[in-house]
Structure formats: structure tokens, C-alpha cells
Length: 243
Ligand code: C5P
Image (cartoon, rainbow, N blue to C red):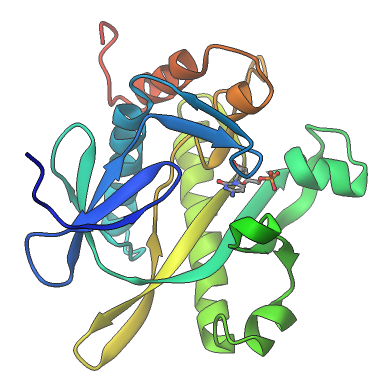
């Protein structure tokens, strides 16, 4: 029986009370959702893969001094994380035009952007996560100007790291989303990367064929979502050829 206290349940994850104060357990579900939950399916094994891929990325981020909430993976579906106060802003970094920027600005999907572009979206399901400007974020007090600076600096460092990581295994990082949180340690507070980084939150294209290896396989009914996530994990050396 599961006696742990459930703190929060989202579309793809559940947060439970952790074993020590200031910790939580992040549980990865198999639910795939898109278009603000209008499309939903269960993809057996997706949670296990995202747990492993996100563990891999966050472990490396911690190692190179990019602070995150991640402590360690506990089992196939769960990881131990530090409790943070999540900032209600999704930070999207784009290297190549795809998805909503391609639609909004009439760009051909696949067009290299003149430089990496950072966008912000207000996390609010009822409003469908609208895009917001820095002005909105500071005026409504979702983050202070300093916190916003810290979030942008983190996003740029994560982009640099992920671009290199994926390029090394033949994958183009088109775009991705991160979430940030306030981590309180005594009198100190710092902004850290929270949530997950996985093919659910990135656009990943094969460098040779441009084949999509991310959640767009689900969003666009392309099929082969789990196989694509497995391929990402294999290339990163997380799974063996036989897994
Ligand atoms: O849909 P859009 O093009 O704005 O998405 C940009 C990037 O942010 C994509 O990699 C997408 O997977 C990610 N994203 C996300 N969660 C959202 C919205 C976008 O992970 N709620």
C-alpha cells in the first residue's frame, strides 16, 4: 500500500512527500497529453524512459554547476528531488523554427533562427499557457527582475549544454522548455532548474533525416513515440541495444 502523502498530481507526474524535510519524490506517469489536455493517451513505458533521460540530463547539469532540483533516481519511475517553490513561468529556448513560433510568425519549420530565442509562457491551464513578456512577469510579480535574469541565464546555459550533448549523438536540439524554482537553503535563496527535461519537453530531430524523436510524434499522430524515446535513450547510452 502506498502510504506516502501525495502533494500534487499533474498531467505527467505526481509529487509525493519525500523521506526528509525539504525533499519530494517525483513520479513519472505514462500519460501523454497535448493541446492543454485535449489529447490524451497512455503510452506504456514512457514514464520509465523520461525518468531515465531526465536523470541523465539533470545529473550532468549538476556536474557542470548548473543548479537543479535533482538529487538522485530512486527506482524505475521515481526520483528524489529538492522541494522548490515553482515559478509559474515556462521558459522556452528555440534554435530552429518549429511548433508555435513557426505558426505565429509564418516561418517554415526547420528554418535556423538568427540566434537562440527565449520566450516565456504563463503556466495557467485555464488560459492555455499564454505567451507573456518580461514586463508581465515582473509587473504581476511572478518573478523579480533578478529572478528573471537568473532564469534566462540558466536557460542559455542549459541550451548550450543540451545542444552539444545531443549533437554528439546525431540529434539536433530544435527547442525545449524548462521550469525554474526557488530553492531555499537557510537564509539563502537561489533559482534552480526544476521539473524534467525529456523528449516530452524538447524537440529533437535526427541530424541526418530530420526524423522527429520527441512528443511531436504524439501531437501529430506520427506513431512510434515510445520507439523514438527509446532511440534517444540508446543514443545517450542509457539503454543497451537489447533493451
Ligand atoms: O508548442 P511550442 O512550439 O511553443 O513548444 C516549444 C517547446 O516547448 C517544445 O519543445 C515543447 O515540447 C515545449 N513545451 C513544453 N510544455 C508546454 C509547452 C511547450 O514542454 N506546456
